[in-house]
Length: 117
Length: 119
Image (cartoon, rainbow over all chains, first blue to last red; front, top):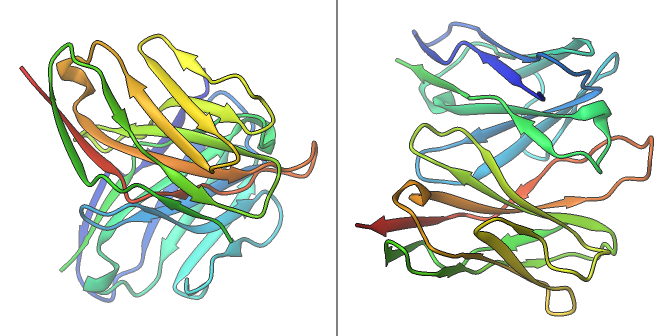
C-alpha cells in the first residue's frame, strides 16, 4: 500500500517549452503533497507544499509563476514548469502522506528527470 | 527555520561490518520527527527509519537503529551487518510535527552521505 506514482519519469525538451509532471497517490487520499527538486549530487530541496483545493505554498526563492502547482483532487497534484530553460534541468520528485497528517510517513514518487536543451 | 547537517560526504566499509552515519540538526521546535532515507542509484527515496522526538526510546528496524540525543540535537544511524545492497546515498531529514488535522509539513534534508559497502 501507500504507492505514489509520478509521470513522466524522464522528459527531454527544447528551451521555452512548458512541461507538466503528474503525481498520483494510487491507493490513498493525500490532502497534502510536496514537490522537491534535486540537482546532481545534491540534496532534495522543498519547492512547495500542495494542498487539495487551495493555492500551493512556495518556499522562499521558488518562483510561483515559473512552477505552477495544481492539486485538483485528493489523489493528483501537478507541477508545470513554464517556459523551461536549461537551468531548470533537474530531478523533480513528489511525496504525499496519508490523509495529510504529520504522524504519517511521507511516500515518494520515483521522480522525473527533466532535461532542457 | 531548521537545518540538518551531515558531516560525512562519503563512507566506505567492508561487507558485514557495522557503520554509523552522523546527523545533527538545529531547530526551535519541541515536537518533530526525524528520518533516515536511502536513495540508491535509481534515485527512488526509501524510508529507512523514523523517530518521533517525544519518544525517548531509539527506533530500530531490523539491521538499522538510531541513536537519538534530543538535547544534543543528534540523530545517528547505525547499520549492522552491512550488505552490498546498502550501498546508496543516505539522507537525514527533519519534519516539524503538526497537530492532528493541521496537515503535514515538508521535509528538510541534510546534504547526504554516500555509503559504499565493499565486498
